[in-house]
Image 1 (cartoon, helix red, strand yellow):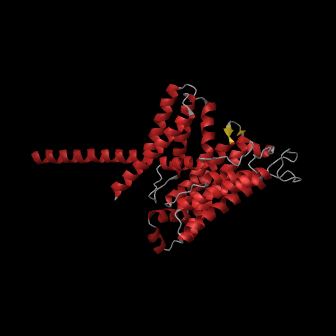
Image 2 (cartoon, rainbow, N blue to C red):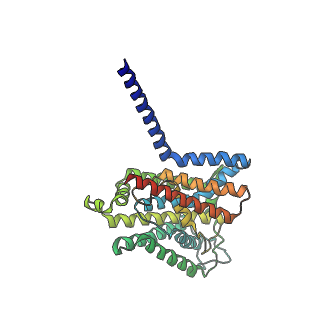
Image 3 (tube, rainbow, N blue to C red):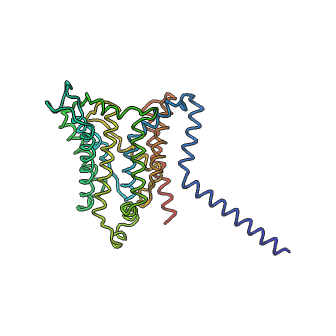
Length: 342
């Protein structure tokens, strides 16, 4: 009888430990979702305006631009890389696209005498140029052995310089109505959010249902093991950074559509926001770990945080400090998790 009681106690303890372990695993995997929910609840109590439909769509629209960039950054960081150039790439691809998307009668027309171009022309130009600049990053990293930080830091400066040379330091405006309509709505749904949702779906499929996605994880997990298993690391690195650059071009199109013009100094610091969203979303800087849904939630956390602090009247400079602290905490948590695994 005593033995049966003892066995029952042990079974009960095992079940309790199993439940606790499951709860810990859920918290590790979805902790950032709980943080987002708590932020939404807390800010909605402090500011009744937060949960109004207009403000919710405003948060989603504001999150769309750096959220699109964060998708590419997720693949890059998962492959154990980094890209500091995406903000400058956005600016350069943006001014090029804007110069091809001006009205025929624009008073500051970049290409004099150029007829009004269909929207597809500036869109393709931005995506192609972004992919080209990204592929240069990937090629430098793959074939010269330059650390990603240095290679993309150089591209950040080069791309920004070309944007300034291309425009003479002046903004390009007077965009066509079809171009600026990208910053508008279809019914009640903001077009930037729709574009973001399409980019999320495509990137999710790429990362989770293609050989390319498997190679991204393999390279980030152990590059030597990836090479031994037959992965063409150099080719895939070029593709990874090219995709990140192309998404920066997508973000440039959305940015131009929303603002109605593009300045060569636009998107300064956006690369840090994209990195922050990716990091907060759980992508590991140690490589081999990253999810698209995490990047989306990370972008929403930053969007909700910025919007909430603005509604509460917090100074923009303090918002930057808070964002920086969140990045540091997210990286510390990531390092601690990886240290425990080792």
